[in-house]
Length: 311
Image 1: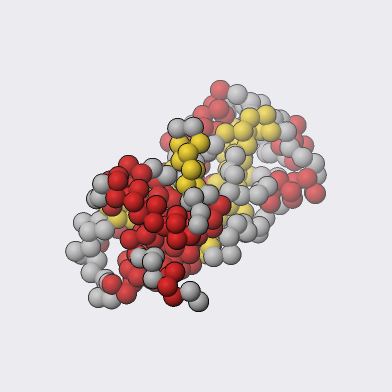
Image 2: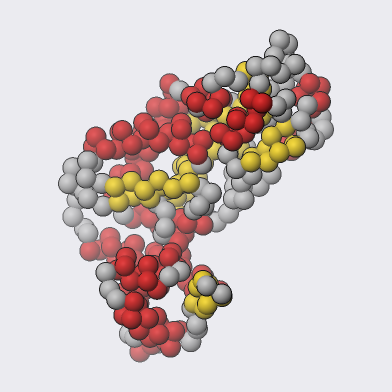
């Protein structure tokens, strides 16, 4: 262990690196830390010299982190979290807590969960701030970087994602999958058969954090591959396309029951075995050292389980 080299790295250096990995901007980093850009540049210069790595380099008009900087990200995040725990040993005071939490979810998840969650949390902690991001802007990688506290994500429970061993996936509630179609669709007046389902074209959902949905593989193994003509980012866009086309859309039943975009569409049961689906809460395991995040976890699971019972 090189104690002399380690002594040259302070929490100031680690925090600066942590925020730079998030912002990739000296100016934004300085604003967040309430220091001058020159101070950030000086701290980065010291860290570069100590680690013998550029850490960040300019590519056109933007900064890019080096492989070493990205590799250090989760470790630095954990060190800062541990130090924060040491500095805030007092009991978590919900009523007076004035910090902020960052969540990410798909737009469809927002429609189903965000309203009851915000109502529940703000009643208990009126001084906090909730930053709720679209998963398209900040995905699962934001958890390890410390940009996000939690993600709420619909996915196939029979095929849990394997993105990062430090991520924990906990099911909030299970759901069914259904097929949506326009009120003018030729299949409206009849039960949906597997031949009908495969005869018509479909709308798919794109998600770079998840592998091929299990229901797609089940469908291929049991019958054959469906024909996806259009891929979109979220349920709402897919439901909108359904209204003016003969495309079929397979989605969450709980979402279809509450979403405004789906209210005029016809819902049919799927004519094949699609496995188990649900909504999961995802977080970075070391973050549970923070009492505030443990409290938030409890509130999210409480609301999620309630939705599972009554939605």
